[in-house]
Image (cartoon, rainbow, N blue to C red; front, side, top):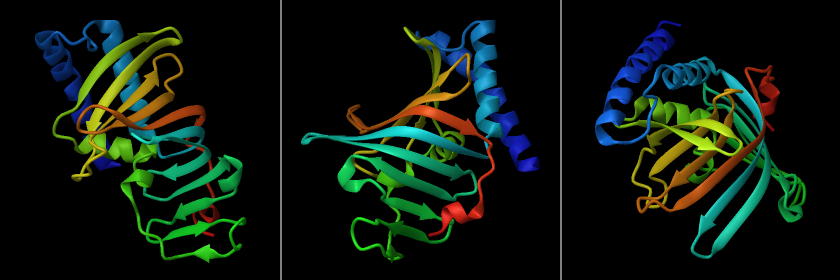
Amino acid sequence: MIKRFLQFFAVSLFVLVVAAGCAESGLRGPADAEEISAFERVQRMLMELENYRAIATVEYRSNKGTNTYETVQHARMTGEYRIEVTAPEHVSGSVTASDGRQIFQFNSRVNGSVNLMVQETPERSEIFLTSFIKNYLQSEEISVSVSDMEEGIRTVLEADVPGDHPYLSVAKLWVDNETLLPVQLIIFDCDGAERIVVTYHVFEKNVELNDELFTL
């Protein structure tokens, strides 16, 4: 609880720094009272997030094309996660879960057995909102802006992706200012090209997640 309070205090203090920095650089940030208030609400949502369940489309983009997957995701801030692929059909039913110590994989279409010899990869771990929040809190340089889209006003948060991965450098999160729910998470490479795009269709925060979800 104390750690979370200190993190929230530090990020709240950052609001004033961001507003001043955006004004000096010419970038549009939470410069007026209404935008700062929205940013504070978004911050509070992220800081109070303990877990979530989401239905999301995940796109992996490269110079060879785009691979798109429909997924159901469960994740906790403590590190546990579960992702089930529901489409396309040839990978439907594939499940990857982690209890925070070990990663399990299961695909009923292959042989119906559980694979325990699974290594973590940033291409998988970085698609979770929980990873973005941790990166956001630990980033030395972060930025905040406001995007006025046809669907509504979004607060856009940016954070560095740790490590020296050639294709995963910076992550941006779009949060709806009205619902305070994440809309999209995009991870860019060092050249600014979109490499992973996560689009949220349903997002439920701080729901009851049984431990059995994270084991197979």
